[in-house]
Image (tube, rainbow, N blue to C red; front, side, top):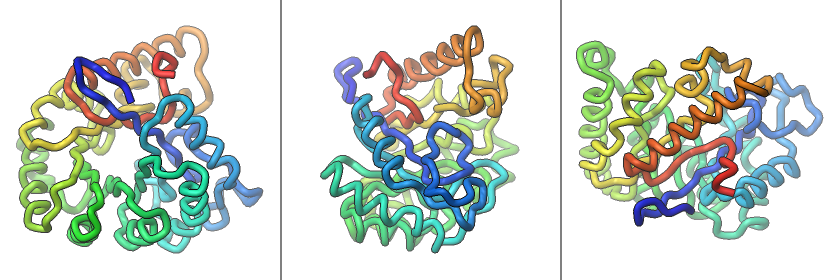
Length: 284
């Protein structure tokens, strides 16, 4: 946890138990099964625990674990496969790391429930919202924190509103509706994520990040996840493939400068949680 202008900001470290998440460094190794075969891929438990341990050592306060990729163009694996990837890691997490805050990146209420039953108190990090009503009830009844993400590609969002409004107005409009739904479900402990990278251009992502302080009107913590997304690499002429292949020289310097710019902007805008694939050296 870091302190900025008297505020405490938490760092959420990302662990992907998938072979195809958009950021290669966040993926865990496989158990020897085909790495790119969704049906056969299983994460290597030792590698997953090592990555978790390294993120915590480097300064992460919360670990966010996902087992079903939500990258653009990806097809979700079945609930059974998602749980098969998660179950052993969640059991080992509490044994190895105790009460470290644990977030589960899933859009399925049954996965969130099974994760809670296995690992106790969790944060539900829902980037899709296709089972929103079930998720809100689950979180409210069990005293869980819920990350609400603005995702214009999800069925809950109005395409017409996206065309008529600016991205900032669209996100504010969405969370007005979400706040009412959360209150009706009895959920008070929710976290606002403006959804950087979800159906938004690089410019729109920077616009949202530059105005995050406006989301404080909802009285909820704000989480942002800009790490390794197009808003970082696209303005400097790079592709995701370039980033995943590894950067060096001038490209690495520019990439780190963009990431640092986003990090400082998040701090200045009053963000409470910053979600990262890797912890910047200045925080270690």
